[in-house]
Image 1 (tube, helix red, strand yellow):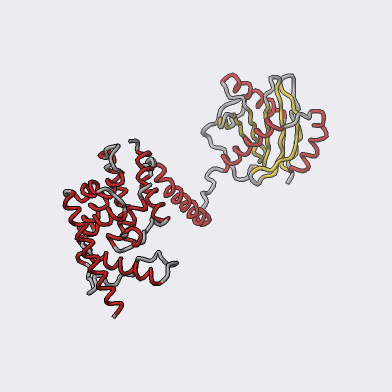
Image 2 (cartoon, rainbow over the protein chains, first blue to last red):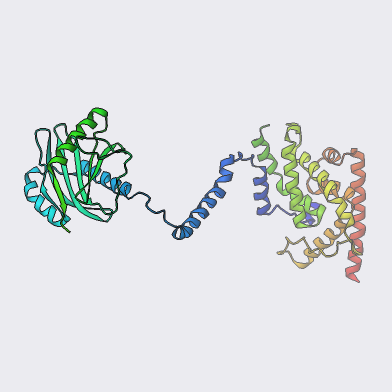
Length: 222
Length: 173
């Protein structure tokens, strides 16, 4: 009698869902790094935004060594020559006058090569705000030598690092897998770069320097 | 019994547990809390359940013990109006909207009468008469002899008749 007369109260769907959820086996605990992932990413993003906001107001570090800036630019140019430079010795006679005209650097004499090394290209260049001329040589073993002549400006070659080569005392540096020989001549800054870096190769590089230095006479047109 | 199997079987008794919880707590949200707590405890102590025994009775026992632990004290503290219905509570017996007013009135009277019964009388009456449990199972749930269960059910019915007579007299007047 009571069963028929007393209304039943079945569990609502929400309760069923809650109970099922409560009875589910414990999910595996997340590892510590997943717990920290969201805050870490959030912090990183905040720091990046802050840096973007602050960066323009930061003072730019002044170039401490003009010689270093130029030498690195010349090395980069040399790397480009190795990767994409063209061997156009056949057009060098025509290219040289144009390169001299556009670069502001004239060459009374120029070393065009011998049995060891050949001039393969000449073109005007623009490095670190300086307009100049760039000559490319290639030796019998396939090594490329880049010779860049720029207005010297206020670039001073330090005594430290200079070496005696024949009758000259140019600056010799090794940087980023390249060798660089720099000297001043007629108010111009001359730099030769090559990948000849070992002791034996360095002697060869110095010989190339002597050939170039003794047979090339640049001067600034302007 | 594997946890998954236990879980599945236990969930089959959800409606019955909720029904009893509603009549014990007389509050919908408290009834839901009671049922959830019952299932959490059942899972926690599932290793104590003896396979082959009456799972339904075991769950009712947990529900009653949980109710006595957490709800009965509060129920006693609740202010009761003169007719035994707690004050300030919205009516919870609401699932007979399609019935005519006469039948609904009978339900209302019966529920109000049931609400006035002490838990010791109400629970065995509901378990035996509404849920259809055997007296032995009710005795196990109530943690008392079967004779005591019979006596309580008898007295519960007597009280219900008295209450219902009062309502009937009151409505005629």
